[in-house]
Length: 149
Image (cartoon, rainbow, N blue to C red; front, side, top):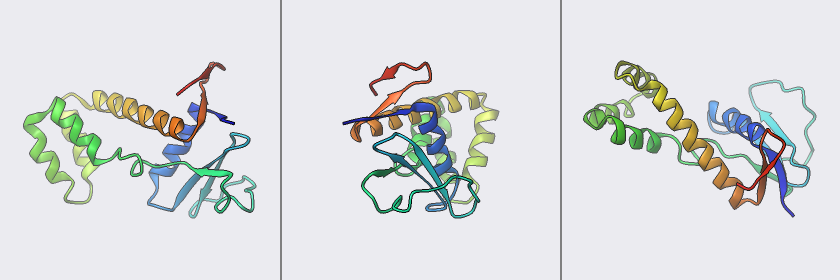
């Protein structure tokens, strides 16, 4: 049996997991009800959590950017396609802290920052939909229609 989850809720959970360092924020999909639970080591969340949330096979951890390989690989792909002359400079950004800040300044200077956001969003959506398919999660898009994903 597959469970249905709203894609917008899943995207919110993905972003929640992705903003913090590893293990600070976690999210789980209840494979029976489709409910998404958010867990944080840093934030006080109001929600009552199931006792077996992190042990039971009933709950599947929502991946973050790193698990879906949406960090540096995505940046490199975008720069190769849109700004090949800047590839070496961008690569150097990622050898130090603050890489994404420097990247966004460069992209803004080149007039492609909005294109980057659209590219990142599209790639994230594709990766999350593939993850859902692998885990037999059906997506209920916000229009109320069931979308196989």
